[in-house]
View 1: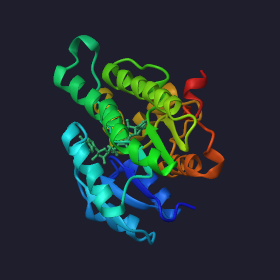
View 2: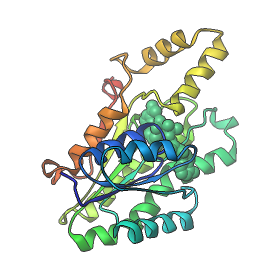
View 3: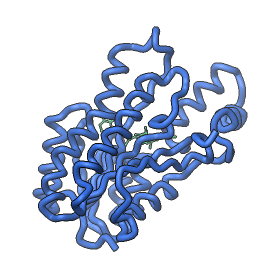
Length: 256
Ligand code: NAD
């Protein structure tokens, strides 16, 4: 379905981003990977799906590096048809104790990066009369949780950016939507499970059960594969008139 298209997925060396990149690759899209850590493993996983894959190591907190990454996509594949703004980090502390540098980093990586990548990718999509921008927000783009001020602020901001981008392009073939996952067991969440287990002197399994029980009525993690399937739907012809939604896959979290 996506043969001949190029998808750039930020923060795709791990977790949800890699899951979405693989789901889009399985539909035939060539992939631009981005993110830190191991690159060769994720690259091989995507290439095994029979598409072309390239990597750019832009630090998503740096607008000039984001611009270089979009240029890299243009020179390698001719442009960006599908932009998935996914890179993100977390830090947990009460507002009065929240380190200023962590606040700045979360706002830059989780929110402003989506603005920069979007503004740079949009003109090419508009010229082609087709494009998909998918922002990986969070259930925390819809509701709050204690000790996550920067993350919740950034994710609410991403949901707002999604709506405005969708509206500005509503009469075109370019759509913009957000995905709002609940808990997904990736390194980002594993750190929170480990911290809970250490703080309470409980096992990892008990900490996982508590984490899910506090927020997610299904008591199940959402998977990167499920999120990838939603991204594929947004890119399908059936998604042509889905514009500006913030679609939660959260086991009922925000329904409470
Ligand atoms: P993860 O830690 O597995 O992956 C994060 C990715 O972002 C990695 O590839 C990492 O290298 C990259 N990254 C981090 N900082 C970067 C930077 N400055 N520049 C470029 N890349 C950078 O985490 P994940 O859980 O897969 O998170 C992906 C997205 O999903 C994030 O935006 C996160 O907020 C969101 N999300 C996660 C969950 C969850 O439960 N895991 C829930 C809702 C939303």
